[in-house]
Length: 87
Image (cartoon, rainbow, N blue to C red; front, side, top):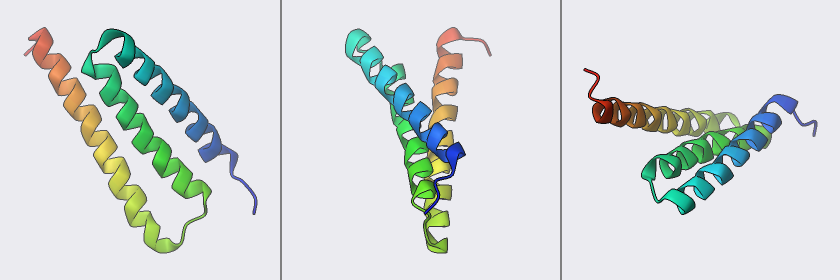
């Protein structure tokens, strides 16, 4: 089995961001770094699934995980905009 370097690098970067997000949450107790850690954990999960060379059926799972992760990003940005009272 040959490993595709792109999802591997993405997975490693996601794990680094998860670690920093958890550290940021631990030090600040703000939820923003914690939710970002969850988002990138979901993206990391999707990259890990791709690295495992899944059967065709798991493409739906990867799609769903990414939709949830992007939804959380939208939620975080919405919260941020509301706090700044921009609109």
